[in-house]
Length: 193
Image (tube, rainbow, N blue to C red):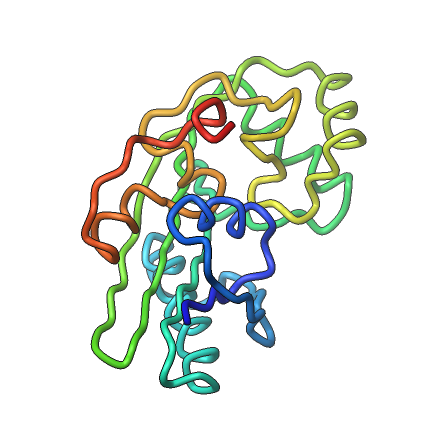
């Protein structure tokens, strides 16, 4: 059985594009702070491995897939906001600018381990303070890295260079190829309906 080591509804939705039959087990202590001397770009993959091994230790005969997403802006990691004020601050800093979204994923089975990082560039449109406040109130982005969801109605994203699914938190195209050995069309919200 394939186990998704995540409580994210977005990851569940995306993985269902690749497999219908999977279980969900949320790793204990799923969240962490980005600290230490490690390069920022390595953190998502390292965290995905920790989550995957945590769940795999409980289910060593199954397959486990874990992921971790990080927004990087001006060399700094933007995790999930602490509160609405923090979300507004993050969105203001991203307005009219480009940032990078990295998702690290790890797949474990009794036969193999695959651990990779996928990068996408995201460009925000110009946001007024009122638009930011409305978005935070409406979309409630407190559980999302960088304080936004690309799939949300009224999303502040103008365009993406790279995988749209990666920005949502699970790069299904890369997983399909490297884990399941098949190519799929790039994900877009329209293609999933």
